[in-house]
Image (cartoon, rainbow, N blue to C red; front, top):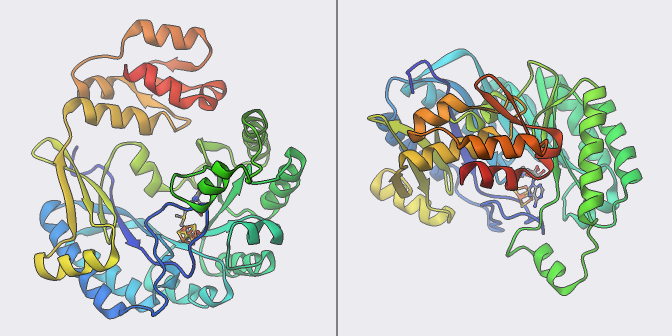
Length: 382
Ligand SMILES: C[S@@+](CC[C@H](N)C(=O)[O-])C[C@H]1O[C@@H](n2cnc3c(N)ncnc32)[C@H](O)[C@@H]1O
Ligand code: SF4
């Protein structure tokens, strides 16, 4: 790590209006609301802690994620951005993203976020038909989402939106139509996620009970392949498994994770990777918003984990993240991190199966390799 490497700040807002039945992110519903000023004070305290752990860095990207950060008041976002600028240098062209849910109430905050300094909005639209939105437990309609998207485009130079596909009952031709419409509305970036059934969610319970009619693996793979082709043709090629952008409009913050750079994560349930004395450390904070708040108020941080990564762990993490990218991984960097090169016989076997391709020191998964990425990663890390 050098001081000039990218450095990001992630701010986690752990609250949502309702819990979607597929979601296992650290998001909680608090019907009685919360004391936002108290939360802000805790964010500022935790930022101070991280400023001491990663001094002298220049922040190149900031990401407000959730949960639902569009439930934050713009003045809270502004105060956090001011504090970040007080602790670190912030690069002139820093990317500052906020994740928003596209309800009409939340859209009213967009102009305020832009005035606070947010320059990129990522909208969780998820589906372009109302019955699917209902099945996903969303709090907005398609019309509301498209109105929020139009407003986002007026307020921000850079706008992305998320969709989830391979949903219950969805056919390949349904997804083809939906993706075609999505591409008509796309600005510079799209995140297109295949629905995953996460343990402990209501969708997982329905799957176990046999009442969730998910597309089978072949159909889901066909949807994935179609997604790559349609986005490529529309000028938004995949730069990561689920992320598509016009060239130059990739999310710099997310690239920082996949390229293995340092970032500090504040808020309940946030993760951090920072290099201290040549060692990469993995930090995490308490997941419960109330426990996090109480600990920050007494200890000055909400940390629940703070461990060094071994050389092999740091290298494996780099491999796992970087192979998600179209640009792939740098074999020399893996060797420098782990102290050994990847086994040539494993590389040759995967290349022979058409799952990876090598260009000099770079290794990337091919389109067929991306369909079985977990297997590719396991064989390379073995
Ligand atoms: C944690 S959410 C936060 C954004 C915002 N709260 C929202 O729901 O729009 C980030 C994105 O992850 C995706 N996501 C969450 N759970 C998922 C799942 N089980 N399968 C696929 N995508 C999922 C959704 O597309 C969502 O927009
Ligand atoms: S998908 Fe988004 S809105 Fe729904 S529970 Fe998860 S974080 Fe909250």
